[in-house]
Image (cartoon, rainbow, N blue to C red):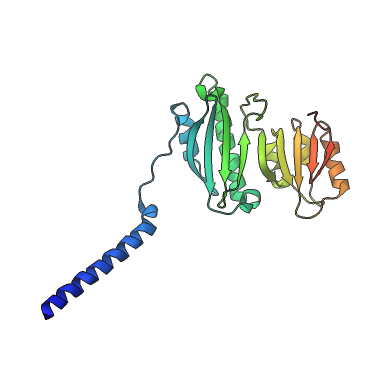
Amino acid sequence: MKNKNKVSLVILIIAILTSILLIVYSFTYKYFEKEEPVPCPSYCEEVSEQISDLDLEGFKYIKAADEGKEGVYFRFESEGNYDELYDDDDCLDDIVKIKNVISAYLSSHKDEILHEKTIRLAFFGEIGNKTEIYNYEKYGKPLEEKFVYYDDMYITPDYFDEFKEAKHIGIKITDDDDLAKLADYTELKMLYIYGENEISRDTIEKVVKMLPNCEVKYRKDTYGRIRKK
């Protein structure tokens, strides 16, 4: 009888230990498994490798995929929250690296399929929000070698030098910021202004004067050259 009890106890202990190991493995295997290579269409394997080789701090490159007959889509995910897409230097630095490496590739590979594709880069925050950048205007589709259209992205004056090619972008400013470098945005057609504190009318008028060919939006109001619908 005692032997049977011992055997039962051993079996119970083994079952408990096995259950514990399975639970631990289920939570930790993803940190030890070998990473699979990033999948992508054959026509963008080379540039995909260049993106994978970048020293990214704020985002992880997830995948590239065909987007209809004319486009390709690159997905990146951040482990931080959505505010980091606006405020975190690592995220903005990564976006600069990624857009620049793809633009350089397009410029030096004019005869390849990727050069004829619309390209969308999507950057996801932890809670599912995202910012996207394009090498085309969504409703017009003139292709660009550079990324000039930015959705839901607001850069600070520290990054004005990195996005001078923009045609559609947002800025995060205060009344005390030096905005002189906005004068370099000669191609800008649409500008969204964001500020955690109220932006004065004087600051808005200063921006409008610097960008005579640009429509400027701040909250519910529109200023400057208003585009026809």
